[in-house]
Length: 228
Image 1 (cartoon, rainbow, N blue to C red):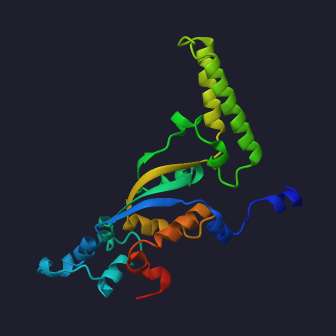
Image 2: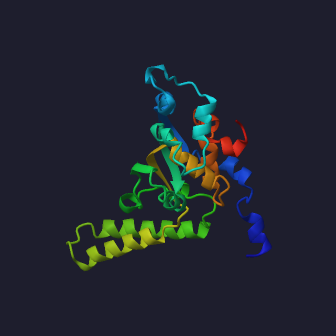
Image 3: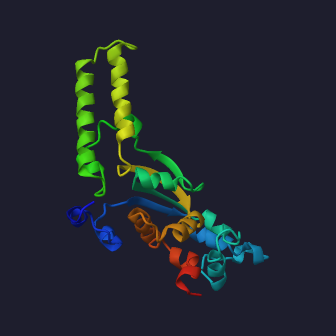
């Protein structure tokens, strides 16, 4: 890569990325916050009817324990649902989290030739690759129209399948898709600890969003912000 290529490349400043990136998270709903805070007080209570949803020092202490100690189990009850617009690259990494569930998502398998490819990729995808993808999609759609009456199993039918597979396997991982997700504060706490300084701007952005969730910073980030 020469100096001109570096100069013309997207910004390497994560803060600039945060300013310029697409709207990543939408349609957010949080359930069970107050009831789960109440439940965090059950172990030390002889009358649970007196437990309240007020955030106390004990609640903060439980929510802020190191991940894996088990004392923050009440965070499982704070359920978060949202739409996430992420790249294929970031979604692959997200799949390692067992309690970040994909409710439903856009499908490249079924709809790759129908997307607006001029809008589907993030800024780090080489424009030459995007042009190749557009050419392949145009060629596939033209071929399908020309041989729309091809018999199943015929050479033309097999060529359609080959051309489609070429599109699927050539698609760069900077392709954006939207998925409906369900998770909880405990899993988000783990994600935050592991990804807040990640190399991918998407993870940094996602962690910034996590911080905006109701009472998340107050309950879960004791060990990150130093507050009691």
